[in-house]
Image (cartoon, rainbow, N blue to C red):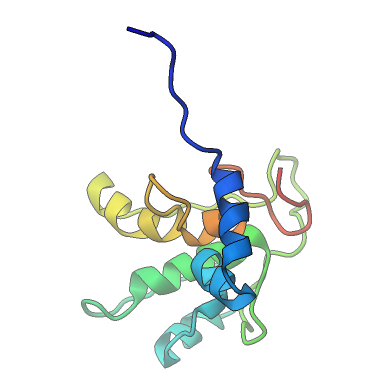
Amino acid sequence: MSEEIEYGPDPNAVRRHAKKMLTDAQYRQKYRRIDFYKPNPKQLEFHNSGATELMLRAGNQLGKTTAGGAEMTFDSLGVYPAWHQGRKFLVKPPIERSVDFIGWAGCMTSTTTRDGIQLKLIGDVTQADGWIVAAVNGQRWRVCHANCGVR
């Protein structure tokens, strides 16, 4: 038996190949899903609020996780759609820290966090399909604000 570790295909090479096979619109639909996010009127009110702290409270299956994930994606990447009139994080704060944006997303339990907002932001661990991860070419856990590029 060989004790060598087998590595799968390079994910970036797979993505480059997929990009060649898809039209630009199809590629963006698959890997830049945040570009196709269309908020409902209540979600739009949430996004356009200029408040420093936001809370979205609604019934079951009305888009709370989707709106929260979209807002976190906009803020962490520093890329906002044209319709966004709310608070924007475009200037690094005047405090010394190693990153441009620090955000927290959580739920009552780790399981609901994993199955809810983490799935929206980071995606399934087996593929780069989360809003943030897919938006920065699948480089997991290395999300950087728009004004510093992807590291």
